[in-house]
Image 1 (cartoon, helix red, strand yellow):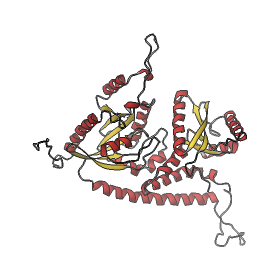
Image 2 (image 1 turned 120 degrees about the vertical axis):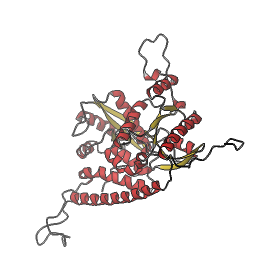
Image 3 (image 1 turned 60 degrees about the vertical axis):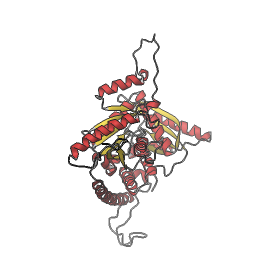
Image 4 (image 1 turned 45 degrees about the vertical axis):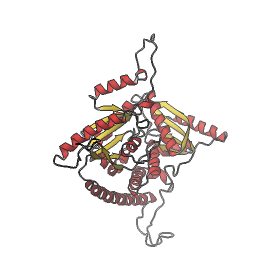
Length: 420
């Protein structure tokens, strides 16, 4: 069977393609393509060119118009003549089997969409049996409606009728079935097996969670690459893998943290992203159970990102899809050390944009909006971490007293002289 994603990280060259529509203006399209380029870089591809087209919406046949497709093909051929081979073309939206087939017929290079690229990164990042099983299930869910594109011999029969039946027909006489039908049946059987495995893993993890004692559970949630793992390492003095790449963390990590006299559990979860396929969320439900069972959510935000407000909305929507939007939560604005702004000239009378807002003004705005239910830190530079610990201590202690009013798990606080 043909591969539909990059099998391993290689320095292939890539072209990115996106649409500018009424719902997605040019600025937003460029931001999405910036993120798509970051995804491609994480997967091991180097972006060499971008193509955008203004349209009412994606073409059901070729995503972009025929003229734009010919323009992309001409660029690929020109690069090949200059001995600069283009490895793939990546589209910013999910493509149907029909669109992929038609685009491949014209461009004659590997075609990926945002979903298949994310799946490839997930496959590359998966380390545990749980994550690998979830990734495989998500890949099969993606592959199933696209089987026609993956086979070039779909009409070949796996059986036959009549007494002769043809070569190799012993035991196969009858109406027969096409290779496509056989593959669909094999994949459905495999998906059923993977779901059984995940159900077993879920039972094991449920048992693990029930054995963690009477402690408050705090989960770090947020967009991918906002610094959750760095904050986890700082708070828990652990060594969770942290890297300036998308989806560096795929497996949920849980650590016991003690602030002053208060122990609690802190979990680092997989990051969210825009246009995350529903099938992917469904496949990773067991990983996201840590979010569902958390008593407190720490929504980590990269305040240095130019589009952090939309990232907040993406995370909030995903939490709502997980039925977690009503949980106690607070926003942790991270990376204040990387925040930049441009001061306007005194004679500039144009309206201020968000690029002209200072960090102090941004902090005041969000603290007023969140009723002080937010804090500004830098996990890497350890800025304002002591204040963060104090705020977190107060929130966790309040939840602990509410949930376990008769639990004497909190040990007494002593000063340096041993006095209570």
